[in-house]
Amino acid sequence: MLDVAVLISGSGTNLQALIDACADDDFPARIVLVISNNPGVKGLERAEKAGIPTKVINHRDYDSRESFDEQIHEALKESGAKLICLAGFMRILDARFVNRWRNRMLNIHPSLLPSFKGLHTQERALEAGVRFTGCTVHFVNPELDDGPIITQAVIAIDPDDDPDTLAAKVLEKEHIIYPQALKLVAEGRVRVVGNKVTIQGADYSDEDIINPKP
Ligand code: GRF
Image (cartoon, rainbow, N blue to C red; front, side, top):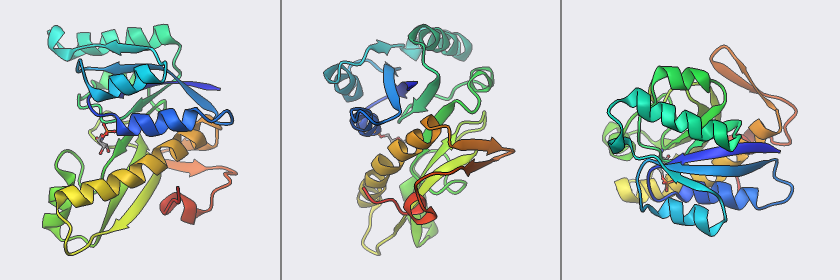
């Protein structure tokens, strides 16, 4: 059983997908702590409802990124978490923190990385006129939205899509691939070789990984 901490900043629908997956007795991971940098967010409620310990570490209370990150690191150590899942966590973590958790920290991003790193991904995808977009679960490197890719899901863009409809379609896929990626990692099937991931002996076909069914 892999002990996981989830870092959030807001609504926490991805957190909910992970909570739901972990509720299955056969799932190889469990969430031992949820940390939010924002107080009073819906994601904290979701964790409390599931009986998961929560902590608010408000970045506004710290005078440097380093001291904020240090506080998070201490809370994680105390929780016994062996892996971090970033799930809509809107703070950039400094390189020292990221390197301490290298290959032990996952992130979900609402685009097909390496395209459209950063914010406003759906607006930018629509502006660029791409026909397909999607979402990516990856290990976190010190660079923003960068690092070895574990899973991706693709969606076709409709001519009628606006940023909101597109975001909703992508989010639906996020909720499928994040638990899948966590499962693969928790089962020890994911190896990082250089900047690439290889997945060993998984019961998934490439098609399942790229275009997952719920
Ligand atoms: C998701 O789109 C995720 O990809 C991005 O932030 C959003 C978080 O949504 N990193 P939620 O808080 O999980 O609902």
